[in-house]
Structures are given as C-alpha cells and as structure tokens.
Image 1 (cartoon, helix red, strand yellow):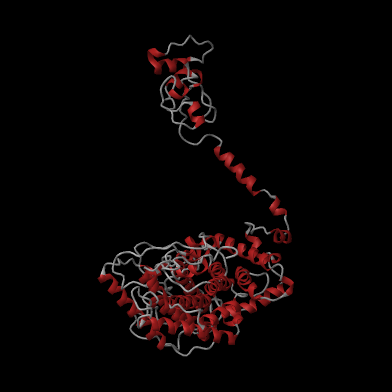
Image 2 (cartoon, rainbow, N blue to C red; image 1 turned 180 degrees about the vertical axis):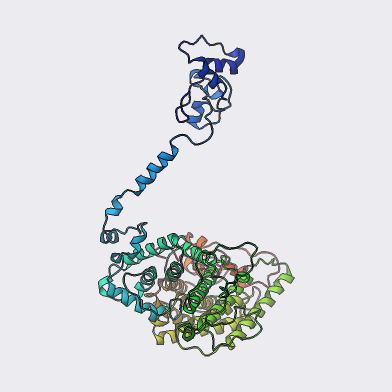
Length: 613
C-alpha cells in the first residue's frame, strides 16, 4: 500500500470473495500483490458507498458485490478501502504555497489610485491605502469639507471636538468627506462627488473591519449619519448593526472607572481599548456612545426593529456642556435615567443640549416599545392598560418638554422639539380616529395630534429662516414627514377637498431640504403623488369607492411594513371587510377598508428604495 495521499487501491478478489460469500466465485487472479501487502489491505474496512454512487452523489445501499444502482453494470461497482483518518501528507506545504500565491502582486495592485477612482474600484485591503491622498479630493477641498462639517453637522451631532486636521488625512476625515460632500457647491467636484463618496465610504468600512479603535467607530458613526439621510436600502444598514455591536464590544455602554476598579461581572471582560488618556477623550467616547444610542432608537422606530442597545444595560453619564468638554478638568455629570424613572430634573448648567436629544429619543423609543406589544382586540383589560400607558407617556413627555431650559436657536434645538412632537403623534394618532366615531377625532387624542402636527409645520418655518443648510438633519426630516402623514390622514378621512395649509407648508419645506438630505426627496415624491391622486379623484366613500389609487394607499395602508409594500405595483387595493367584533376601541384604519394597524405606520415609507417611486 502506498502513502495516505495516494489513490486508494482497488479491492482484491480475496476481499470481494470474503465479503460476498457463496455469491461470488471469481477466477484466480494473476499478478496479485505480495502476501504482506495483501494482508494489510484485508485488515482495512471497505467504504460503505461504492465509487460510481459517490461520483453520481446518490445514495448507495451498500450491497456487495454489486449495489442496486450498479446492477446493470456490475463490473463498475467497486467499494474502495477506507482511508486512514487525519490530514494527508503534504497538506501543510500545499496551504503555504496557496498563501504565498495570494500575497503575490495582482493586477488590482498595479492600478493607480486615479484609475481606481475612475473605474469605481472598492478599497484595497492594504492598511497603507487608508492614507492615500489620491482617493480624496484635493487637500484644499478637503479642508473646506471639514469646515462644512463643524458648521452644519457637528451642531446636531457633536462627537468630534474642534481640532486642526492635517494631511495625510486620518480615517475620521474620510468619513467627514462622505457626510459633507452633499453640502459642497465646489464646481471642481460637481461631477465626481459620488465617486469620491463611494471610495471614501469603502475605505472607512474596510478600516472599521480591520482596525478596532475609537477613531474607526467615530468614522462609522458619521457614515451612519450619511446613511439615514440618504436613499439607501436595508442592504446598507449593516453599518448600523456594526456600529451598535462595536459600541458594546468596546465598552462604550458603561462608564470607565478612572480609579482603576472595574464594575463586577460574572465573567471578566476582555479590554479591547486602553482607558481614555485625558478628560477630552473620555467625554468624546461618551458622546460617541450617545450618538449611537440616538441612531439606534431612530432606526428601530422608523423600521419596527428591536433595540440593539437595551435600556437596562446602559450605565452612562449624560454629555456635558461644550465649554467643560474643551477644558482639562475631569467632570461628573448625572447618570442617564429614563424620564419616567428619574427623581429630579438634572442641573442644566452642566449638560450639553445633546443630553436633551438623548432624552427625547428615549421617550420616542418607549412609545415604540408600547405600541409593538401585541394586544388582543377582545381583551378589554389589555386595551385599557395600553390607553393608560399612552396617557402616562404623553403626560411624562409634556412635563419633560416644559422643564427644558432655553436652548440656543439652531439645528439641535429644532431636532429636539421635532422629536418631541413626533413622539406625541406616534402615541396619540392610534386613538385619534375611532372606528365607530362620528368623524371628529375624540379628545384628548385628536387635539394632541393636530397641535403637534401644526407645531412641526411652524418648526419648518423657523428652520427656513435659519437656512436649511444649517438647520436640516435626517431626524428633523423624518419628524416633519410624520406630521405631514398625520395631517393627510386627518384631512382625507374628514372628506375634505384638499390637504390643509400646514400640510402644504411641510411639503414645501421637504422640497427645500431635498438637495441636502435625499431622504426628503423620497418623502416629497410620496406626498405629492398622493396629493395629486386625491385632487383628481372623488371623495373617499367606502361603499361607492371601495378601492383607492396606490399613491394614496401608500399613506393610508398601515398594515404592511415599508419593505413588504415596496413590491406592491398594483394601482388599487381590493376592499377588505371589517371583522364582526366590537370595534369601538380601535382606530379607524384597523377596521375601515384599505386602512391598517398603526404598528408599522411610522416605518420609512413604502417605495422609499424603489427607483421612480
């Protein structure tokens, strides 16, 4: 018998005779192997699958000497000797040769950075490529983009301290380029914005996977800001998943112990990054976590997902004022406590406005959690409990809003107020239109919805006065979309001839924000299309007109998730009969034709990721 790596020998006639018994009577073989070699082969068992069955990848019944599959060609039915277990000799050498082959230069390594940009190649795997200046715009344009970031984006996402960046640019600058190219009007990059954006984004993603550091997570967070303001679909939302898991793995979810003591755990955690070197770095990590928290809450509310950062795991202090952050003394701010559970209002003299954005999104997240719980329509106790919790959260949100200190006019102040009103809309719109009502929204739910929707229309006016390039943000855009949708539903179900003035104001504001955040462009298309269909059609009548144009149905059909509705190409949806149970406690769209459940109502809109929607 040869080496383990040699092909297995063909079974001898003696082996076949021994296994087959009286059925097999072969003729004497000539030129057989020596007796010692034959004995070693006879001591080894045969495979349970014959060679032809193995080659054809079919089940073999292991009948000797000929299986049923080979009955027509008995001569082909051969059962090889089983090989010894373990790696074959030479396996290690073969793997070494393969690694050496992979490390040899490839045609992509021979392409210049300029050619890679023109051809749209992704980031090479080499870590040195992250410092290649040719993959970004010229240095003077990069400096302008950095200035745009600190002027227009940092005010509502303050995670990078003001600093002087110099070439060669680090990974944070690549992310800044991605998120700020939308704000640049430099004619030199008018035709190459998307190429620069994609190349820089690919480098940030590659760096985040290959390098574990605070700077890589900061860069990922800036990519997420670009993501939520763009038209990209679920395939790109892995960035958010990577971001939230990185926050947990790096220990950003809890406070660092400067005394050297670590919180007790059932198992010791592996420390991936060193403790912060100074106060500024400590606060930067804290703000980074809170931005990730805000993005997690926004993403889950707008998609129906579960939170990636549960409340009970968070042990973080709130972010401090910018003046304290830029100092050298270590500061101590209050630990975060949900608004529903805190004992007193934190001292505003210590806190950054970002702390109030965190609290606003916590309230929005709790409204989301309440409405994702399944309630049986016939269980009066569950229904009343949800109503009570809705009023409790509404009251807590109003009390929190009344306790807010005066905030400087700007994008942060606008987004905090917008999230607050969107929270009230999410909580109260569920009950604003009862199925068996008279057409007038019951109180206090109806008044709360209309008041908050109108307040968001007024915020659009304030943002316009500041200039949308300064005041707009994806969170603000989403909040105004929620208000526009509530106003549309309210006016449509009230059989009005056209949407109200506030709806038109929000629609105009979304159009003006579209050049900066393309998400606003998709909202604008959906609202305009629904408005156009409404104006050219007849008044809504469930009996006379049991189906609606798809454009209106996109806004009113609340049963489908956003992504299940993307593939709906029909222009009308068939009539749906209401169930025969007591419906007085349910919203109108739960039982009326073409109207669905509120659970998915605040998703990103249907058709958001469809071209030409």
